[in-house]
Image (cartoon, rainbow, N blue to C red; front, side, top):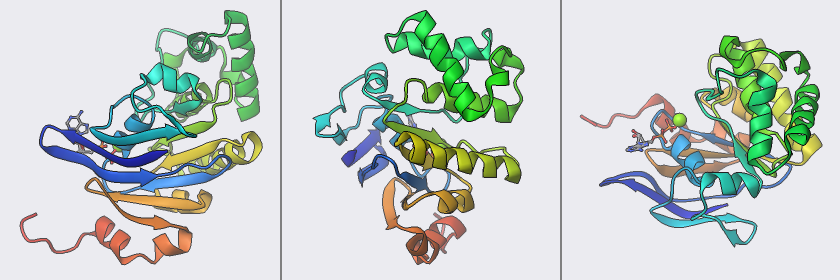
Length: 238
Ligand SMILES: Nc1ncnc2c1ncn2[C@@H]1O[C@H](COP(=O)(O)OP(=O)(O)O)[C@@H](O)[C@H]1O
Ligand SMILES: [Mg+2]
């Protein structure tokens, strides 16, 4: 999906020459310490940030120049680290708005919203005001919104942040269902490395904008580079 992507903010490179692929029906992890460039990568893949160089591909179509709403229409959905729900609306309307934005009728969008909430087992949230939702439900609604009209790819930006262990386990099961039952390709950005390793088949590791490692669970768990990135190596005054 991303090929040789570099993003520079002024003289600072948030990402350097990153190549990363998301396969339909599989869950991939994207991990790395704070500031590694994970959210920037999601922003590039979803049209919220244009790459300074490199290509973003959907199949063999180049989508690096498309605005976010067109990339969503092309089937790439995301969640945000902070919920970003419309606080004045109830959950059903929050979801329906996405459907309307995708070009569906109001009625079809409401039906789809109910279908998605049902599929996730949270239909009881439909009439709740978004503003009063507990944190974990707000997260679930963010995912439900991203699942409207079955995207081909789903990018989750730290969806388990602030969740209890039991809630994170539920989330892990949901993520597996998204890949297994819907055939969606998932990219899971997560601080909780245990969660990532429990649900993903292939993990990418960013550190300071560089892809320092990638591979399966065994490779990531035993990687000295990954260990050093997380636990620090002596770098003088750096
Ligand atoms: N719009 C921006 N302008 C300048 N610097 C940015 C911008 N967005 C992110 N950065 C910087 O890029 C680096 C990577 O940020 P980010 O992708 O949010 O990291 P992560 O999600 O891995 O914590 C950080 O140093 C951050 O301060
Ligand atoms: Mg981030």
